[in-house]
Length: 185
Image (cartoon, rainbow, N blue to C red; front, top):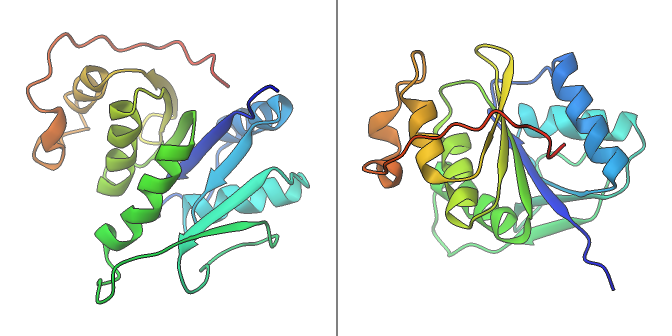
């Protein structure tokens, strides 16, 4: 039996409106019949959910922390991720579900505002797992495909993407080879 391919779609909370170019990529994901793994946050997660709902796309799983989802606009199936007791509801807390999506996905599609540490952490996690990521760069309305951690480091060194202190595990990587082939979807 043939494996169902899954894409983890996530992004910055500041991106609550999806540009036409991103909608086109989501349409390609729909055409390929990929299973979409998406979080429950406001911003990019909710905007992606709204668009997939408007297209009546059912191959969606919403990830959230145990106790209920903040957003699930079409009542898709959910995966509630357990956490240790006493955990504050901060970026680390919600990052637990993001790591679960990264583990299950075959690809990533990340919508990045150029500032969100959580989106960079998701890209970094997927690359560490050797899973390719298509990143939408909202600052210049462009896409880039990343397949290795050194490509992420190269991206972060570009003007306008100064996050060196926020991406400790990619520091020290060599051979920057940014791949502009975005044919995954």
